Image (cartoon, rainbow, N blue to C red; front, side):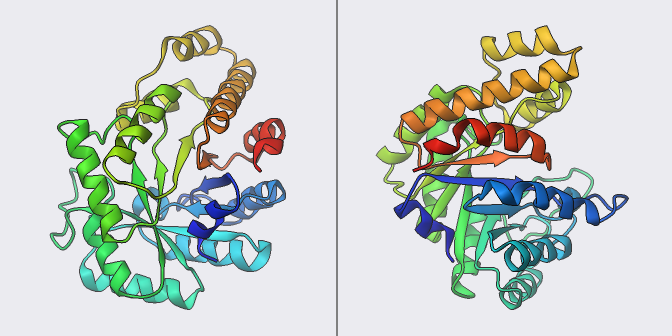
Length: 285
């Protein structure tokens, strides 16, 4: 099933998981999916290997999600360190594994690893995927602008290029102020971007992790959010529960404002995903 078709029927709920690191047993991802599957997500996306190292684990996990749980998987594919030939090889592997949906990304530039020159932008990867088979292609978007974009106008222009190249749905990077998402959604619509946009939500469970992620993504931390982190940073249980409550409040507001879908960055933590979903499940109609 192509995940873009689900938006015609309902507000979507999807999850993101990541493969275990090389020093972690692969079985750990099975217990993660065991915990997430009963929540009945519309699809689960799997990031591009441990630390972006490659797709072998990604494809294997996607295949397991589809075959064992009957849930549609989305395989991430990051191109900045890949040649054209390598991308074609990985697409062939995905096709053989029955993977229909790909999240096409440029990927983060590692200052210690010179990037290949075959792909400079995600739009170029999208064009190649579009030419290479009947895949549904997802893209990433940044409600507060890509960290490397000089301004929001330029960022929206590049986003429109991705959609024009063949991207049929978008997943947003994390954000903590819904007003930023609504402003971005309006700008995207004005630019003629008419594909579904899922809102990416990351629950606050570890202040240091969230602060690092926010810095990488250039996501601002609202005063209300900072107050929560400051008050509960030394109480892990209270921090977890407050983070769940904040995520729930974001999701309720987003659905009330007709968001196309919610993409939950689970951090491979079924407990947190379960608590959030139990509070908002009835809203997904």
